Image (cartoon, rainbow, N blue to C red; front, side, top):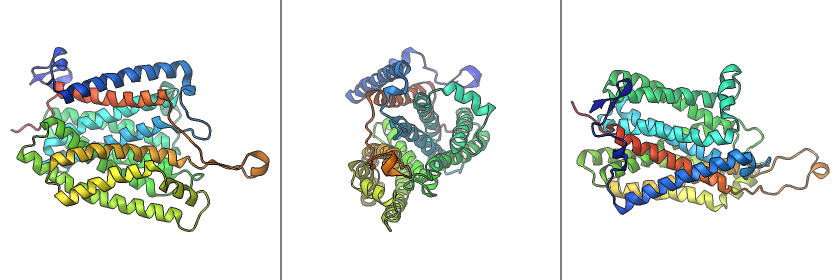
Length: 395
């Protein structure tokens, strides 16, 4: 281990050339090609956006939030989930989870940076936003609080990661706890952006601020299985198996609670036939994306955990990959389903036609920027594994 700038420990063998030095297996080569392709798409998507502006997106006045909002939520949920998993070891002192602390905290930094990279091209004027975020803060705005808290959260995560690299566990615990509390506040605030929508009864209420925290933890555990699977090439040692078995059992409990939450959310939405809520819930219930979310992120993982009791980490790795696909649909459905029902003027016969369901499908530019965010995330994480020692160090 050698010391880099700002007293940051980096690997002895790190060099720019070492970034190209990886095992050339078919799987690794496929991931490398996909990552480079996604990064190229990101560049093309940004260029198209800069030329055409929001006209490059398929968003409308009736459906103003599109794929980029959903992908942003996907990444920041992943970041909060990583933060929670990383905190189990260095903040709460569960020794079995110390081995994943650095990897998870670095993952939380990478995923939130990817989320910021995606949302920057949805905001319109990100530089102006940063300036006036400070000069004229909107203290009554949930979105202002969300952005501000996520900025503070990212700062705490970077400082915590710095102390973890230097094995200063006392200071890492202080900033880790601070980052966790601010991250949970920011994430709950993100849920309140939907919960405060009085004009959208399907979202309005206390459900989403709490649901976001629960699904963040679930996402973090899925990602933990994925990153540890790649770290050990699915050949886990006894210590890692013990840690992953514990995570799987926690995951089983969390998914059970999530199923309970979602079931009662759907029942209370449909019950009583409340206008603008019941018909939207029924429409959601008949959509294939809703069932993709339920089957991939809830049903399959829970069945596997209950039948194996978490003792088959290789199977959980593959289940977690499908689970992350389900989590993506969870985020996409959250954004799209909120806007399914068009807002009505009071005198419908005079001012507008009878409403129909709002249809939306992302444009190529939106897809390119979204996939580019994924490519950026993978590339940053890969570079981090080459630069830093993300494994637990024993003294």
